[in-house]
Length: 209
Image (cartoon, rainbow, N blue to C red; front, side):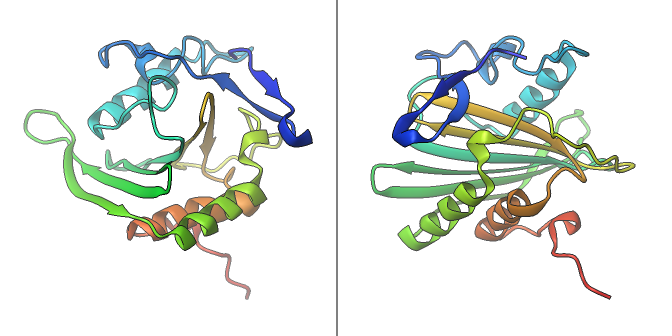
């Protein structure tokens, strides 16, 4: 995987890659993710980077890994294993302004393109933003490894992509159904709730029997 840099600000170690000051064209794979961002010792990551780049392009989403984006931003992309109906939810802070943009796609249409079936753009309150950032802190998203320490195999599971941007650092965390546990699961559920989108069943709290 692409080498990361480490920050010890306020005695807290965080991980990420440095944000690029300028972006390439949206037509290039590097627009959303730096070269070898998804590579591991076992895979070059080209297929994964291509898949997520295509989905983000269809969602009409900006890159969080380059350019002048908001002061702070977080995004989740959910890709169903059965239907080409991805969902993207992005929250951001610029100064004292808090915003949310969420898009659901469905397709393909007769031209083999994904089409927007729902899009929400709205302001968040300071209380909502603080609730989210508290959940993010509890989940230690800046310390989450690129790959889960213990993988849980779920047949026909969904794919998840979580991104975080804070000023000049960027972090990306790809996951699969079964990997989204504990506080991180709470973060994902909260993002869907804030967007007013149906919460995927796998994110619902377990029911005790």
